Image (cartoon, rainbow, N blue to C red; front, side, top):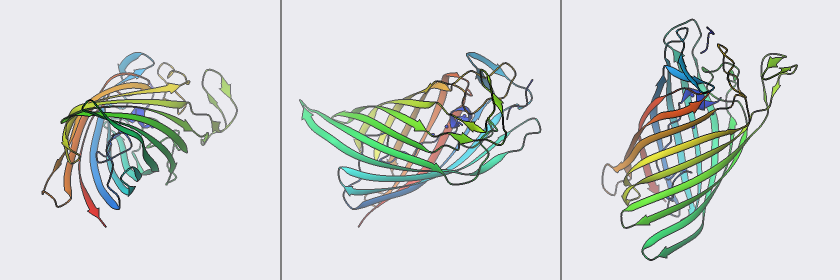
Amino acid sequence: MFNLKSPILLILFCGCFFPLKSQTEIDGLFMGKRNICGGFVYGQSQWQKYWEGDYLRTNENIGQLKSRQMSFMANYGFTSKTNLILSTSYIQNFTTKGTLLEQKGFQDANLFLKHELWAKNINGFLTSLVAVAGVSTPISNYVVDYLPLSIGSGARTASMRFLMDIQKRDYFLTLSSSYIARSTITIDRNSYYTDRLIYSNQVVLPNLWNHNIRLGYRPSPDNYVEFTGEFNNSIGGFNIRKNDMPFPSNEMDMVRIGLSGKKEIIKNKGFSAIGGLTQTVYGKNVGKSFSWYSGLVYQYEF
């Protein structure tokens, strides 16, 4: 048995992704012109079983992997159709058994530019098409070749998302897809094995597809509840070898379902509470994780 220690390195394996639900890059909502929204979210994720390739198994050397995450975000409305979103997270990963040391620290800085390309009322269905361009970069010198305890992939990324939001009265459907390109990373060894022996400290990470579906009740941007589905697919990679540790360039696919919502706390005062939970129901080379999160956001108009 190996001493194995899944927002990606893949945070997919830790399962510690807690989205900030307040006009984010994966919804059809926008901040108004010259409005700014800031907030924080605390979340936890844990798993005991993980997929080694397609095989769902446990590992008594690590017991249960647990992750705690505090995320911070800010969203500014240049106009009612163009928003700038900035976020980062502090993550702590640890296991309940074994001798592997916990990993913790600030992960990556994420910047998204979100723009409404088109909007129209079609027979009572308010329909909009949105484009979101994003970049991210590590903001601390965390260890990347220590899965599943690593807090991030260590890669710089660039992404492009297209999103369609449809609302009829108080009910809505949001569909989106994103392509995420990732840079090569450097690990602290001079050779490694994937499906062959490679004499290098440079690792090429597979790029990713991310697809989202959200369906729910939304009487206002500050009050809604939604069911969510998320599908992550690596474009390439390879399976974890039997009884081996995971590796940054593994193929990591997963399907997650969840429930989330937002509630205005004090009417017309700008404070709202957010929260949600997710469960990984299928995966490949990822943990079968359960996650929950809650937080507070505040909106201010200049």
